[in-house]
Length: 251
Length: 103
Image 1 (cartoon, rainbow over the protein chains, first blue to last red):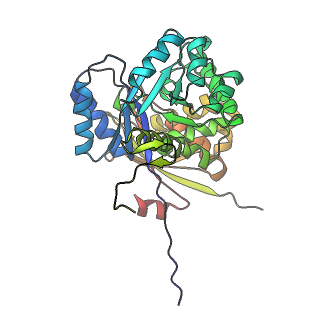
Image 2 (cartoon, rainbow over the protein chains, first blue to last red):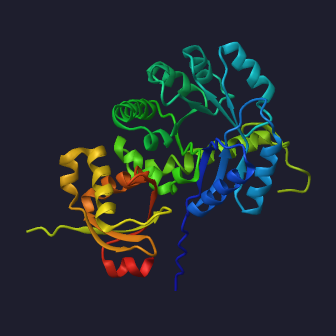
Image 3 (cartoon, chains in turn purple, orange):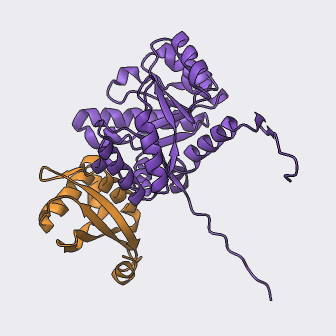
């Protein structure tokens, strides 16, 4: 008699952008507990350059207690491309995820071109500064950068500004798909009430004609690939993509 | 005649306050109308089946074809009657019996 083994691949969900406005550590802990209850397994907090890393260590410890995988992330806000390059040189090997907030076209183009950048994030309220066009996408398609979309503005904005935001997102997701650029959907949540289950967040992509698999990939596969790739690069045994040191005796 | 397939959704309402049936249903209708317009809302065949005020759980019914539309609309609800709120889908099923079993 044949035995049939069925392997059920359960998706692990990731929210790479939690952005608590309150500096109180208890508020951050509440956010983490909420994220855990909603079914995420990996989380990343928004940390800006030169910000105190003490709280990050506390968060890391708390995540460990809650059996959540903490992803160290930094958000860069450079004003020109030279500043971006120098910041990347200093911090690339210290963080697992590097996100560049593209407020100028010069920065956006350099960030898309640079292989050290993981996520491209564009301002949600200043629509003139959303530089994710076909040229930007072409540059990003040759590097490793993914497009990060925060869903928080969809909950906060009302009326005409939400319509405009949706219109920009529709255009950007279409361009990203045309150039095979991975999309990472993050909550961008500042408070617990703005958090949703990963499958619920993914349903928002139905608005832009995504099918279920593609929508779920934006909250699971795409961010997980970036995290595992960078963790491999940051490990001491890494030499080059596909090449790593194996200790004697290991097979 | 082709049978219309329906889906039942169990919702958890996360809020400090509780609401009346009508207020909750209106909030869902409003969200659908804002996102998809009156035409989109008319396709959903949405109705509130059951609402447990104490547990803050509700069951709504919609057409299978309009399920993605309803799910994306539920996500965008952030306040009801001026109170911050978030709605989470607990389960989706084709029958109320199976839905109640799963929650």
